[in-house]
Length: 218
View (cartoon, one colour):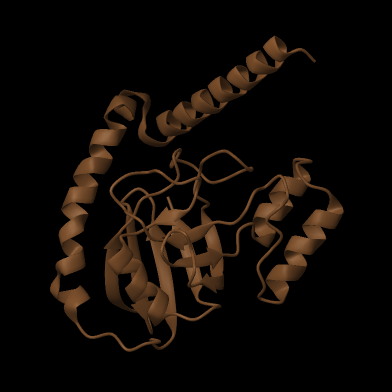
């Protein structure tokens, strides 16, 4: 394959990915809202930012907290931390570069949607601190198997990891290595991870253990 043909293929793939992202935004928000998507996020971020200084977030928090649970609301760009079903913290977040719609495959720039758990904690992350999520889940794997995106062996490995509470394989066509991490929440800049301000991820990191349930909703 000559160099010019390879360049054309790479450009074509990038265009396809960009169009796919725009289609996802249009189907999620309505075509007329697409040009204002970034503006809407900016307003949401600005309105959410004061929550980090709210009375709720100033209340002392034990480390670790009792019976923790995380809910991530993608459209609201918000992460909520619960303890025994009581909301104890709320933080603004950033998402993947193509934030609308669930993650389907490696490289699509989307943040997953579904039920996961924290499968690892990394105190030495290049993004300050990070919490690894159990994407892909068994449901993600079942859908991918039906669509011939992964094989039966890969499916079994993902299901086996979830049944044991471990991190699933992150090297399949579904992608992986989805983290909640630091380095800023003001824009959608990750490859699919959930980003937070450094002060916020520090609170979250210290408050929860591996195994904490994480629900990501549209």
